[in-house]
Image 1 (cartoon, rainbow over the protein chains, first blue to last red):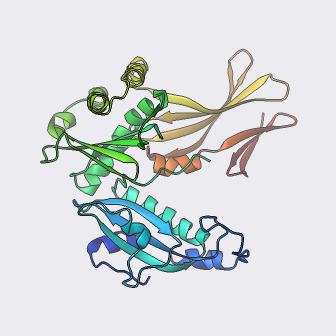
Image 2 (cartoon, rainbow over the protein chains, first blue to last red):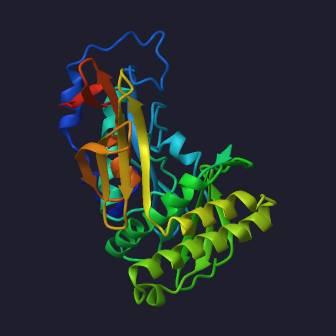
Image 3 (cartoon, chains in turn red, orange):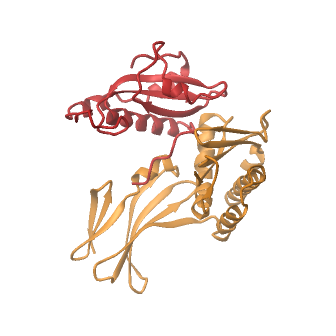
Length: 129
Length: 212
């Protein structure tokens, strides 16, 4: 993991659920051309980052992903745009190659945090397949 | 945006206790959601009642990411002393009373909330429902994915009945913690093949097939 911008125990809380083999599982796939691929498409090979928002009580509000470039100070513009008074944003991982890989990691982190007792009030529930 | 999701959250509890509280209350909130006719709101799809013994923010509202949070006082000691069915009633009443207060604040119609509340009471908090239902090609057999959402676990069954309604097959597909974040992704689909072969699928992938 890299580009962790905000120091704090919460980074480890989420970080421990990251599985590093996710990248290797998916890196073998041939990426489609990004010319006509939407950034939010699972087929997008654009570099992504994983972020986390915490509220004033220290509760994790949500874990999200974005394909936007990080700010020069290492923070996430996408995460910052969702901050309310007293909230804190943390970049958990950056430069993840491809949307599918970062979504897989997001799912693992969300499931792990949820099982650990975090409510993740601003995270959308997984869709019924 | 349609309002259709409801949560009760013991946000000041330790993570372990908060998790236990969430797992217990999901069957009540999900039962309410199932009967709730979604209403149009000004950008809200979920309401979370944030419960604590006492907080400066009690009776105040916060909003972020299209989720509305309403702080309410909650007597956890009283709740823990109740038996299982009384706990469910206590939780439902907490949810319902809070939502009625929000109806007054936001001008929402109370009717869909009352209707859902009454149906949960009518079901006596037994949250069992059919997720998918398919007839076979001769229409002599009906296959169903039936969900049992309890306070302790979520059981998903595959059941087949004949035309007369008699059960001819039943199989437990999976058991999971009663939390949509964990079981929603496991809920799949069913498909009949020729010669009464029934297939259980998830995300288009065959998981198991059964010869009836």
